[in-house]
Image 1: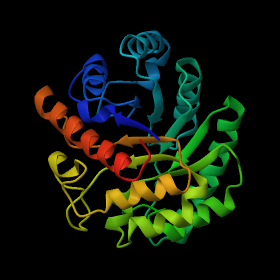
Image 2: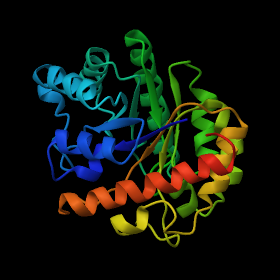
Image 3: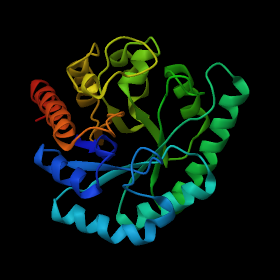
Length: 265
């Protein structure tokens, strides 16, 4: 497994700051945020001018860019995301499911959209991932499995986020076993309680909440998962660098301890 950090944690700072403190915290890679309003790290309308500097930062800090998060399913925006991914060397693009929970038409539309986007991912030789998201059309294990059944493309996979599965009322360790064979990415974080929000940025740090993340990482290891495991902490755009770096380092230490405890490192 490759431990990484989604640069959205440092969304209030420039991308070099995110690279610098991700490397200093001991991570193996970085997931770049292309989330409008949460960061200015990869603005897709300007990807051609940003690709070179991003590659230079990746080389400078010896951190490969293991994934990109771009939540929209808009075909034009995704086309830019795919082109940027190819130029920068990013193998995985994570997008959101959209829609709303419990609405069959919404779920059907999401699956149709994702199927078409997966075909475009195949054209570019990259992988498109989606995760179950509280309140969205794909929100739990059942709806995740439906999407995986109906989208057969080898360029489509699941981005499994234990905090969303936990807040959907499930046990993430048990849920993981049902989908791990089609997982291509992990967004990892903790949370306290099963409310809609994952909580403050500090409470999203691994080990702060209620999720059995040791069991989760052990199950990933037992099933041979070797892909990216990227910490995704939201809500810290107004934090200074020190607060962001403390969260990054704390969570990475917990992940490293989990890997060592289950014999993965």
